[in-house]
Image (cartoon, rainbow, N blue to C red; front, top):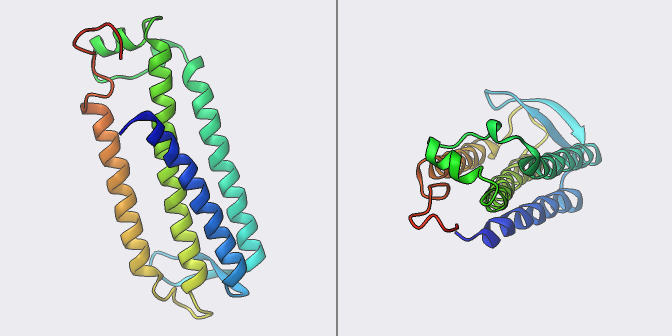
Length: 177
């Protein structure tokens, strides 16, 4: 996957998140579950507008974390950077290669946060639209299990790829990345 596609993932994630909020606002019931317990029982309800406001706040927080993380990458001291081996650390933290490292890290943050936005949108929209005013979350249970499983597989898989894949390996020619 190229860096522009990784950056596009964040934009797609934000669009999906906003669409989920709009869908909830337009066709969601007047009261939506605000908290679902581990057994699948709804133990807190909120108005639709309250739910959308909370989710807007969460989206703003996620965006702030994204922007802050990307800004921090280029400012953090090289001793704080953890790479799989010493050769990679020496290569990527060298002054000539640090701009490329920073660009790659920002693209990776975009990708990880993009799939996080999609995950939160799916969970929030599903619980808001499928749960009825009963004690259970209805069909939300299986949807959440599937969404959490896919999200965790994607996050773990991508992190393993970053740790053992070739993304941050020292290039063979060592002339650039």
